[in-house]
Image 1 (cartoon, rainbow, N blue to C red):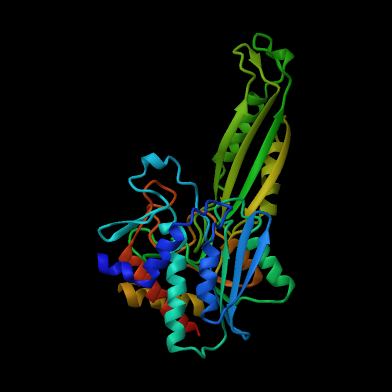
Image 2 (cartoon, helix red, strand yellow; image 1 turned 90 degrees about the horizontal axis):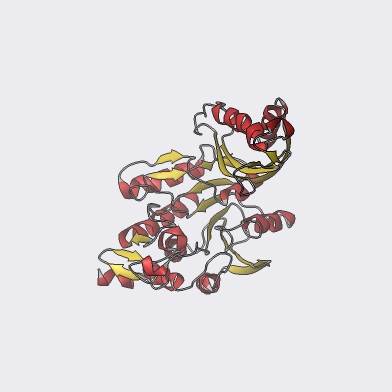
Length: 379
């Protein structure tokens, strides 16, 4: 495999992996990308919000605008001694390169940049514009990244028509799955108040654990919906419960819990909140609820972008991809509300966020060709 290491997308991937860009730090990745893009005639703009570095790059002044989006930040490597390689030194084993961010999602970024270079050699006078929206805040709080960039673009009247996100969407083999939407994510932070007391005299106390247990059980048994043609059923999960004062003979005065909905387009965050409050209000319970909306569900309808992505994948793999809305959230939730068609196509996700994260070299090369073909069909 030594000869493959001279391919430009693999060289660029290795350069990016060597940047220890743990959220929210970019660690120089976007400067590397900007230099490549400026050499192709892109106007590059760095937008800094808090600790987060964002890159908005555009080539062309006219519409339509085809944007590629992604992130340079990675999750922490964890116990580096448990890795078989240095997580921030790309290491080749056979046809695979190892390192943090190889799959999520520096290989996607490298493939995008090289695909644009190849496309422009053949079509320097393409129609419309090509853009990139890159953030260092996707794996973290996601409040000073793509969300803020989209607010900035909207405020100055700059519009994106189509967006391809290079997130690792594939499951078993490259191109077997393409995401055309994502479920919404809504979290509830619950506080249930009681009266502390002796366990032997429950009539003199109010145990918040006892009061909240039937409510949480009821929320778990509700069939929120059955999904629809594009989305799986809405999921409710309690992820944290805390109570007690550390003594076995004392009922506590307070219970806190956190729960999360991953919900389909059958709901909005307002209707979900209303339904949950109805359940709590039907019980004798003194509670408070705070909410955090990570993003509403979004869905890209059939059209030119999906047709182009499906055609490109089928051309390079011999089979059409599954169109899915599964998985967690992505920054597509911040891009889609501006009226943008959003599709996610990237490498295999089996090793993301794990020890020994990796990507196949051949997949990165083929992904480059897929992105190039999408541009040929769209522009």
